[in-house]
Image (cartoon, rainbow, N blue to C red; front, top):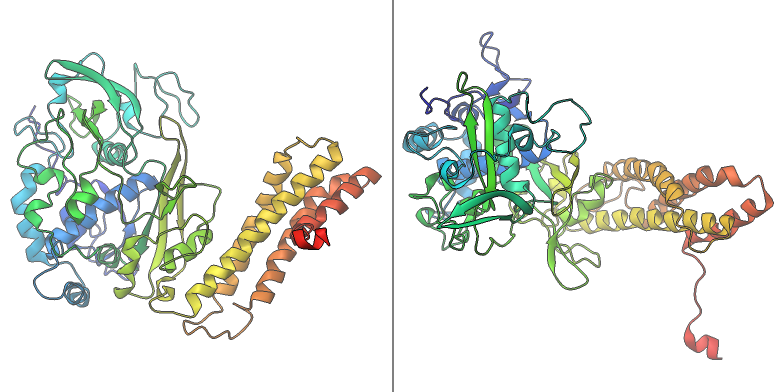
Length: 527
């Protein structure tokens, strides 16, 4: 069977949603899936990617950013003014066809999903067929991150490693990307290189992290807004994507460090994979090798689409994905140059440039709530209304005030948690009682209501800092969030107020909603 047959530039593997105003030119003019070439050529007609799994969406966006930079020439800061060149492309309304065709012609042979003829399958390492034990492959259930594999429990579908349902090539390639960006650390399939066999890998560059992306009305706007101006020293020949490498890297040597935006977007994987096609139908994947990519050293975590913050020990780390945390609570860390907070968050670098494309851009957060090693918990996918017009550079007065409003919402959420936990501890007469059940119920009532309150006030703002209503009035915002906290507290604690002990506990703990008992200054106590 010929293996160089499934080319990702040509085959329809990327699910998309077309813009509503796109002309209907025929029954097949708007397919559900497109290949990379059609996606780039028709990005102005596509509203967004329609990928169900957020980590796959996030990973593919990074691939598309790199391809967009290449076909537009925005992968280098020169010639001329980089921002002006990007605006010229924006005014044209589409990515340059000549640039797309030139790049496709040059690298099409590196975009075969299976390629035993050239030994360079896309984003894979063909050497694994010899360096890994053919009887100890990972299997397709391990490859597809939403499936149960090995001895883990099946939640949404039944299946077995011995007789798995074979995934399509389109499904497999998206999960291939998830492994490259979100793969776990720890034990993996053994790989033997230069006579030494090892079976341990490092976590992927985005594992546990939440990724933030500017999003326009079309994929064309989204891709341009997602580009970051390269450093003056970046040269495209020294900033290669993995499919542009002349040779595959030596697994025994330290990985090559990213030197520019394209390698930083695409060449930071710590995992090596190889897909095995079905003998009868190359549209299906029969098996997969999944193992480590580098034995010595690791690629430092650095990404321009993450909020970076500082731990109490002074270590820099990305804000983690948390399926319980609403996106509005991160908004000031996306709009402000120096957001408030003890974690000293840094705004994702992409937002320094995104608003130049449009002030009507939204923010989409994509991530995977995970632990550092094998445990995966929950996908995270959230979006804001148009907010990029409120970045600090464009709305000097309003953006900091948005941060203050977020802080007020957070403050009363923390006070509510302390109040219900104290009430439970006093009611049970157990100082060690945690009251987690009450805290969870109170949070479930407060945070959705606080989100609605936040966006209601946000929508009443203008970008000059004026307050046509009580949108940013601190006193009014404080009172509104306090009322939501009180309502949640009274609802959660109502069941115990029928007894004298319960009513007393609820009454005593209520003061926590207002900040608790104020401690007297030391000099006042001495007097």
